Length: 395
Picture 1 (cartoon, rainbow, N blue to C red):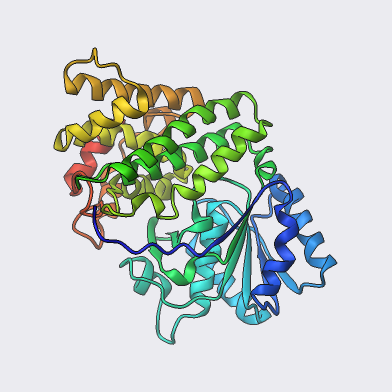
Picture 2: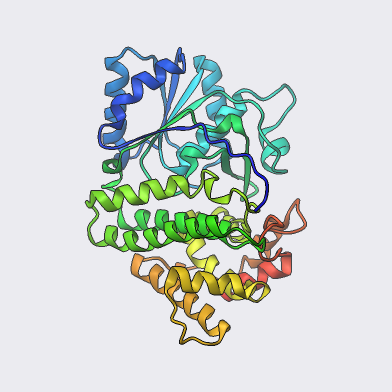
């Protein structure tokens, strides 16, 4: 096990009555005027209405910033930065899922940028750490990205059609309000995308080649098994509070770094590759991951078959009768694809209406500004030809 430092200061307020804690959290943050950031959709308006009622009841000054879109755009972040400066905003309350939260984080960083600094050029494109930002809080409506308790944000450049990541401790939300009831009206497709996003965060951390990480391996395996169990329940019974609660908490702890302590950060090549699909075709992040992850597994598993075999046996209950390791691993991938089918997610690009005409563009964008995709701590670094091969396998 590697030496590590764990820092997770986000206060989690979980349950049916969690929203009633909002005034105390705002008071602790000494907020003068907050930005209420959300997507403006009818699907989340009933939650926004409840938040506004609490803010008004307690005379908390705020200004509304809405219209945030999935695969959050740099242009909207920059509009939000101007909005904060015009309205003298000193706190951002994000009401939504990963896209709203990531947009809020981008805005929070942008407001505090030093003169002459550019958010995309100096932070997102080179993956440089953000060192200063105005504080944010979260009322979560979509359990998926785990952005409510992580220090990362992923933003899409409108013109370049690239998705890039930045992060820093200053982007950790001060608090996150998690009420599973707020997720019950999610359409099945959004629920499914969120579930696979959670699974992907677990698998990205799991598939490392560093040894002697049995505790965190088994923690990841336990959360993955829970997600695999609860996901289909929510497709059949969307109002199931207990399953909603399990998924909401799983999303949070899958991405707040607790599961990567003592091990290397993870692989993340599937994320880097799928980002280009989302940026090019505006496909939901979880949907893109459901397509790329099985293809990536098929392409790289021979670089550490023992790790994939362990996952097959411990998480997917692949029987020891699959006495050849390759057969067991391929059976695990088949079961993962079957899970996606059960959730209503495509597992091929063609199944999502995507052909190979933009493969070269996507692979080029994935490698633009870097020598490979992935972190260098995982199973295998992908160069441009590797990314093309994974896309071909996913077709």
